[in-house]
Length: 273
Image 1 (cartoon, helix red, strand yellow):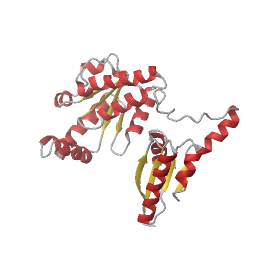
Image 2 (cartoon, one colour; image 1 turned 180 degrees about the vertical axis):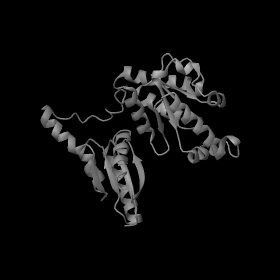
Image 3 (cartoon, helix red, strand yellow; image 1 turned 60 degrees about the horizontal axis):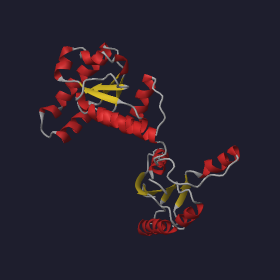
Image 4 (spheres, rainbow, N blue to C red; image 1 turned 30 degrees about the vertical axis):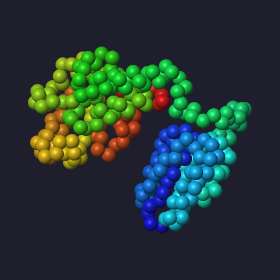
């Protein structure tokens, strides 16, 4: 084995479930590099045959048996895909039969149930929350009365993507405030943040990583210098401690984990859409 394997995430819908669960499983095998490919909307025999051919071609080219993380509901389509010779891992199979017995009813076989527009009110909540996050990004709108979460930190620590993730997946109205030089020198929270203190959460990051992110955004600038990054982060961390604000280092933490930890700490319970 050469330490690399090809993985196909095959779905009769968007492929989001297959890829999310698949990556969670594959992450347990740290010594192997996985080349992932999503094949979505495989909902007819013709599309299943095309997927099988693509997978079989990769098998023939590199000699390593591909892995298929499969969430196709129709067993007949799954059988066609299995003709590729790949290792088939059916994500839904272990649960469907058990639930059919427990609930006393057969599965519907309908596709696109998890990610389709099933509940318009939930969809509208996500859109409104996303619009809110964009309108309150980087301190654009300082009115945080309706914010459920306000992320605080120096520039480029991951505030914006985390706000958008919480909006899209949980319908959370999240704002973020970038600590400026003036804020850091003042040594205290800006007044606008004191008014929503119970909803504040600080983000920080390793200075080397911050310098890399800033350098990619503004090459050669003083803003990206490691000394500047170290200084800002030290002042921000001191501010978080002084104000007794909860905080999290985002250097080695995924957005999903960052969001979950923030919501858990603030006591916000919301189902993931």
